[in-house]
Image 1 (tube, helix red, strand yellow):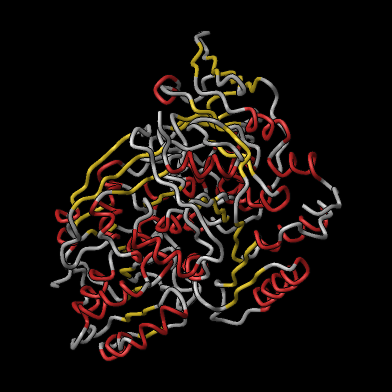
Image 2: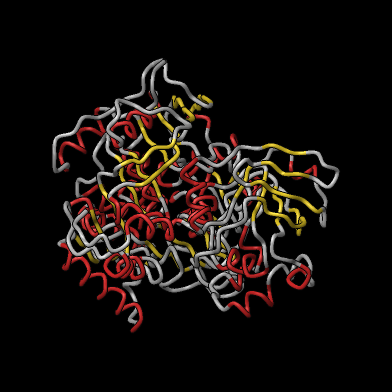
Length: 177
Length: 418
């Protein structure tokens, strides 16, 4: 639910993890932790089922990569809070689950759809994501192209989330709507 | 080139003759609905007043709030949330309904599910209003955008068309249909789209079953679902609607992302394994027959309406729930409860050993009588993720009211003998 700082035009980092199809976002922290909003606790459990060192090795700018239907399931927020706090700056996937897409776009996380991405990268690849253009540059210089976000979604991400954009556009209007 | 129902409805909501799938527009919902929930509405109420300085609404009738969660226990924090809700609705002159049942059903009963209109809610099961040819869209926290600006930006969804023929065989209903569709198209087979139902099988389907089916649209990845209006749904809408309406129908040459024909007569009872409704978890009831259960639940915004309770009564009449099994029934609304009482359905269920509970959302999300670790429950609820109905170490299977009732009698998962 927290607002996040807007990302740079080009997000440079490494691929922190690659998930398969239908990845359930709850699994990031485990089902028993999906009601926690304690940042320290979420950090201690973030990705421990996959890689106990994940939170220590992730750096701001890193991205995670997903297969088809990323975020399938009930799109709880704490797993995303955990990933954000760990430093993840964007998610690139073959496709996104609609509930997750809407919920996390609200929070200002760039969710970029790029077909073929899951097979084209490996963990720790240094990549550069031009999120407005949905263009991902790989270590060998080749570029994968996806579906750019629509202009309104770009505005949301640039503002650091839907709520920040709403505040910028309508705060303290003090009038009937 | 013609238009789908969604393109026409969202066209109207954006003051255009029609819009096309793939476009992004600001659209103006006829109703903006919520139920109160800690961390959602209480926060949004405060934001609207304090952050946006809104002290008066031009058209309060577009806002509707239900208190349908957290009614069955007394907890100071939740009592406070309900009071915040009452105060907020009174301040702005907003319609509030408390303790009358599950809001997604009340939306229909109160005449708010108007054919051809666009409704939003933060909860995705609002898609159930599609039974009446209305478009209901669960927009999550973007509800604050709608509340504050009166509109919200959406990507106009493409549509997948389902032509239904035939009729459900005995012991099969819309729950089996939705899980058959998931099996057929995949759990993301209609992702970011709307499902459109029509054909003779759709026209033969009871309104309750249409509501249950549309309410589960999200499990195909769809953002909503709707039926072509017909004599049956329009008769209901005319009876309850608060204003004149102009239903929309798809054009014969509408463009669809995909089109499927399903013969309802060929369907068999389905049961979903604990975890999620994904394809690999969707089994026939026969495949899981014999799986022991200790709890059974019939209710929710998908499956606690009069047709569902009639189905349960048909199976349970003159029989007794197995020893060691607790069967809980929650009529979807107070009106459904009263009708079931008048028809003698609740007496049949009670005689079989079922406990009839007040109409609310509390069972479905594990607030009322939460499951204990190690328990197996078979449920008509809407979600079976771990922890949904109590302990994360309990298992939730999902099936139709026929299947849940038959399983409660046997003490193990069974398809109905009806």
